[in-house]
Image (cartoon, rainbow, N blue to C red; front, side):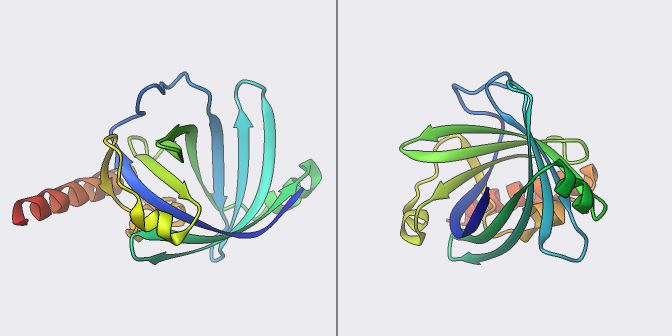
Amino acid sequence: MNKTPQTEFQRIFLINGLPEPLTPASGHLQIFDNYIEGTRFRLRLMRDPHTKVWTRILQQRSEFTDGKQAVINLSEMYLNDVEYGLFERLRGREIRKNRYFHEFDQIEWKFDIYLGEPRGLRIAKADLASAGQAADLIPPPFTLIEITNDPFFAGGNLVEKNFSEIRTKMEQVANHEQQQIIDR
């Protein structure tokens, strides 16, 4: 099944961990994103640990920010094993994460807990229906710092970073946020 191009509106935040009622044992997907160097494409391999079903997707993402929300134009093609094998030769660097889902205040949230080199990075993304809904979002208490407009935290950029670089950036963002609160 192929998905026609769509526009998504998101707000993205750093979080300390999974908010209640979620736990690491809650239902989730295992995601393996391979960014194809020099392109806007990535190969996404997803596994549901409960059913052990694998999904293979070729995605093209174009991202930009508009005020407080990230606007993403996304096209995807679902691949069978043979097709994935052909594209797999183009694989770039990989990011692995566990993705959890939960609805809060009638908004669907995705919670990405990164594994491997970006271990320790935890992000919450609100998927919103419109630019207006994104602009009106009041961040829930489980969010720490908004990173929607920070290109450092985009997957295609994170794949090039090591643990130390990610940790340093998270500290810089936290310090900047604290300074803004003091200055108010």
